[in-house]
Image (cartoon, rainbow, N blue to C red):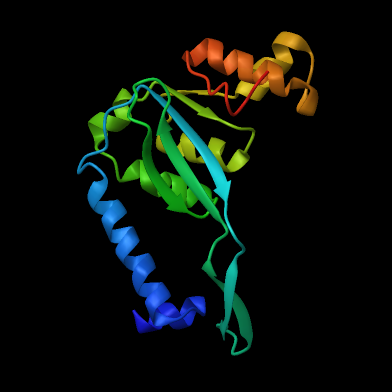
Length: 174
């Protein structure tokens, strides 16, 4: 715990409280990931990245990432299971590792993966779930309407709501 506090440059009580909260959250997760047919993958940014100076293989010094500023969440889009998992780092390797840690039967049950236009997620899905179709709501909205980027936000929400029969009207009014 002391080393974690040093790495993140926080006091021991702060590190201990964070570790206790993480342990409680992990205990609340089901032992096995619930089966899904429609998987959603998206990133969330929090805080800033943390680095430390370490010795490089050539004897010099390089910066090593201690804490990434990105987390990637995996969610059940239609079954009601909600958040299935979360991994640190917005890399194909981290997403592929989470998918690979799931049971073979779970991976075989996934039919569709919805991602944003992020090649990292596309690579992870292509490598880990080659049998699924990848769905990009933004591209569908652009094809359907001919409108892209900021102008299509309301249209994207309407298409997602129509496709998955859910909405958060209070948070995303059209």
